[in-house]
Each structure stands twice: as structure tokens, then as C-alpha cells.
Length: 553
Image (cartoon, rainbow, N blue to C red; front, side, top):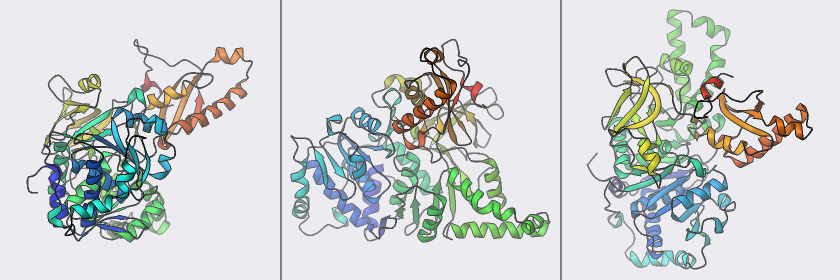
């Protein structure tokens, strides 16, 4: 990859791949070429300038994965502004908090999400633009966005009287030390952390992907992870567009049946996934094959087992479209049984490790070099160390530094200072070991964060804070059991007694509490069950609940 700034990668790619397909919305029949994407970006740049948006200003985007979501993102960063991606399943209060906390001056939103937002709740936003067709949804009284948008085609034609071609593509010359993305790890006021991602952080990921993942012009990707997360955004979207790849955006919940149909139609060469997708495919597609009596018997025979595993591998590759060269799994721990089987049948799969604060990659190895149960090798542009007396054998906190590490947390210097060691290493909060070849092995988590089924960050304290405010809840603890969120609740028994309620009444009230809570949190934060706990939770001297005592309940 020719050395250039992160933003200039897109100027080069759009010029080089002008007539090639870039983005497709699954099921829509609409494909944008690189030239058409560049044209839409140029129009939005005119809009930004007319609306007096300056380099460094923040622009938020919220909606399901789509071509126009990506165009809004690209238009923002190539203008020199900062994009603020927001998960579409955050509740309205959290969305408004992020928009306000980030100081966003413009919002691109899906129509359905816009309907849940109150204009008076986001007073700093000049206007809201639809992700359906870039029409104006709303504007502040003293703004003229409607006038600008209505004349945008006219202004575009005036600026490019001879038509828009590759030579007209010109993007910001900003330094890679400038913030490009402000990525919030959660929504609620008390826990929000806006990760300041620099151009050099993303460039480190792009250069590594170019040298090791090896997508090429004409390849195809299927994007089904949320682009508001750094994992899906970095590789399905940002990296793919530097290589002349066509990305198809699923734009709907990635249930296995829907995904397999889409895989068959798109025929991707590389798949970026979270473990749950392949764990479900293994359970629903492969286990039934293995449980058939003739197959089960044949697997005990040395010569036949190789043939059967080969056939299963071919069947799986065919189910994924038939052209798979590599499947990259990350964002959550991978079930060891599934990983072992995939490696046994020589399926091209490997596991990486990263975090939003590293935009996101820390370690990864191709399937040809992957060490089982590791998370790959630490990237060349990164360093990792283990806070342990014996880093190879005794787990300690993983600490990292290097090109991919964020600048800090937006308007949160206290937390930003706490997350770095005195000598400048980022504390990941994860426990692991590191072998002599720099392969990283995750052994557990020191943080309380729970990773959702699609790689979402779930912070139990946020859920507990809301639950603790509901009737007859003294304190609560949210844990994960079998990929379900369970809330342990120690009731306010004094209030129960004073109200003359019975135990049966309390159970019904907790069901109502569950419904109320689930309406106030994101879809992936919903509680599956509330279990009443008879005693107050044990606490540390600082009055924090000793969470580890309740993980196996």
C-alpha cells in the first residue's frame, strides 16, 4: 500500500475504481459505483460548506447498515469533520445524550429513528437528514438547510460544469493526528465514553489488512455486523473501499436462514463475523449431519473420517457462497468446541482480538498461521505486554501500545487517564497470556463488560442503575447465563411488608419491572429473566458487589 494519509486512501481508491461497483443494499437492486459514491460525497461537501460546517465539527449518523449510511460517514471524514456513529438500537434518550455530548451539529438518521427523537432535545443540531434519500427531515428555525438541499443539484452542476470525473475527487489534507471518528462505547450518561479515534489509528488497521487479509478489486463482501461498531466498520466498509471491493449491506437482523440465503447470492470471498453466527451454523447445519448413525460410525474409521470432514468442509463453503477464502471471527469469545471442529475439517477460519480503543485490531493471524485457541499474533504496528510475573503461563492484564491506540475519551480526561499506565500502555481490562512468538491468548475478563451476541458492548451497571429505580428493588446484579441476561434482584422486603404484599404479588411485580426495564434499554440489553435473591449481595470494603461470587448461579 502506497504510503499516504488515511483520508487520501479514499481519494486514490475512488479515482482508480471510478467505474467499479462499490456498495449494494441487499434486495434493493441498487448498486453505487465508486464514481457515484464520490459524486454523492461531493454533493454533501457542498451542503456542509453552505451550512457553515467546519473541519473538526461533529456529525452523527444512526441507522441500519446501508449505502447511504456509509456515504454520510465518508462525506464527513473526507471533508475533515468527525463522524459520530450511533448504534441504531440505542433508545431515544441515549441517542440524544450521545448527540449532545459529542457536540454534533448535524444528524443523518433513518426515518423511523428520527420519529422517536425530539428536536428540542438536541438543540445543537442544525438539522436532520434522511438516510433513505438525503432529504431534509427537520431543521432549527434559524437554519436554511431546506433551501440548500432543494438547490443542491443546481449548485453541484454549477461547480462541475463539465461533469464530475475522477480528477474532480479531492479530499481533506488533514493530518493523521486529527480525530476522525468519535465512537461511543455505550449510551447512558453516567457511563458514556466517546473513544477519540485518529486517522493514524485507522490507517494502522488499513495497512495491516492490505498486507495480510488481501482483498482485491472485484472481490465481494457481505456486511451484516453493525457499522456503528469499529469491527464491522473497519473491515466490511473502510478497508473494503480502499481495495476496489463491492460490499453488500444486509440491512436486517442476521438470522442464520437470512444470512445463508444472502451468502449464496453475494458469494463473498472474505467474511467478517462474530462467533455466534458460526456457532449457530455449526449447531443447526453440522451437528445434525454428525449425529446421523452412518456418519457417526464412519468417523471412527481412520480413512473415512478424512473424507467425511472434507465433504462437510465443502458443504459449509458452498453454504457460504462457494468462494470463501477466509473467515475472520472476533468481537466475542469463540466456543472452543466449534473452533476445534472448524480447524479439524480445515475450514479457513481464524480469530482476532481488538477493542474500540484500538480501532479495533490488536492481534490477528491468517488461518494458514493461526495457533488454535489463540487470538492471533500481535500486529507489527502494536506492542503487547502481560501484567504478570510469568506472561507465558500466568494470566495477567493485557496492556498495549502502538499506532492503533486511541487519543483518549472525549470530554472525559479523568477516565482517559485511568485507562493508561504511568508509562503509557493502554489497560485493556482483559486477562491473557503471550507466548514467545507474540501469539495472544485470552484467558478471561477483568472488566464487568458483557459482549452481546453480535459483538455489542453491554455494561451491566447501566442496566442495574435503571432496574434499581423500579418498585421494590433494593439492589440488583445482571449476569450472563447461556447467552441470556439474567437479573438477580434483592427486593426491598421492608417496603413489601409495609405494602401487605405476598411473595406471589412480588413475582408479578418483578415481571412488570422486567417489561418496564426492557422498554428502556437497547434490544441487546433486554433481560430474559428476573430471579429473586433472598439476601443482600456480598460487598467489598468499598461497598462494590463481589460479582465473581455470583457468576455461576
